[in-house]
Picture 1 (tube, rainbow, N blue to C red):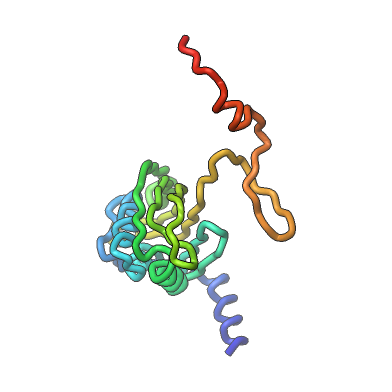
Picture 2: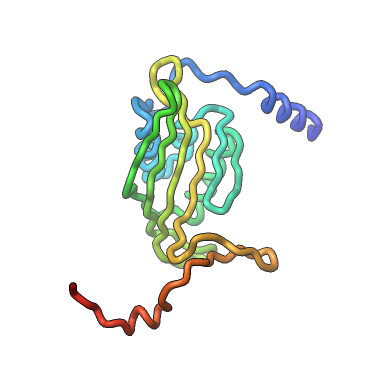
Length: 191
C-alpha cells in the first residue's frame, strides 16, 4: 500500500489533475476575490466540504504553522479537525482584500483576517488573532475561478522575523525602537 501511495504521489507531481469543466463550489466564484468571501462564509458555517470545493482537486494549502495540506481531501480533513477543536465557536472576519490579475486566467488574492473565539487544547478562551491569507486562482472552462494554492499566516505584532532555538520558533524584531516602558512614560506632544 505504501509503495502504491508513493507511485501515485510521483504520478501527480508529473501529471497534474485536469481542471474541472464546471465549478464544484457551493457558490461558484465569479471573480477571484470571491474565494476569500466564500471561504469566510463556509468557515462561519463550519462547512469544511464547502471550503474544499473552493479549490482544485490537487490544490495545496499551507496553514499558519506551516503544515502543508496537499489535495482537496487533506484540506477538508484539516478544516474539519479545526472546527471540532480550536474553532468550534470562533468567528473570522476580513479586514482588507486585494487581487492581482496574472493575465486573463490566473490571479492572486490576499486578504487580512481577524479571528476571535478560538480555544486552547484545554478548551479555555485565547486572545484574538490577525493574519493574512493568500491564494492563487485559475479560471476554468465555465468562466468561474478555483483556488490552486493557498497560504495562511498570522501577523505577529512587534516582530519582523522568527528565530529558532532548541526547536522552538520565537517571533522577534531586529528593528530597535523605544521599549514599551519608554513609550508608556513618554509625554504626548502636539505639533
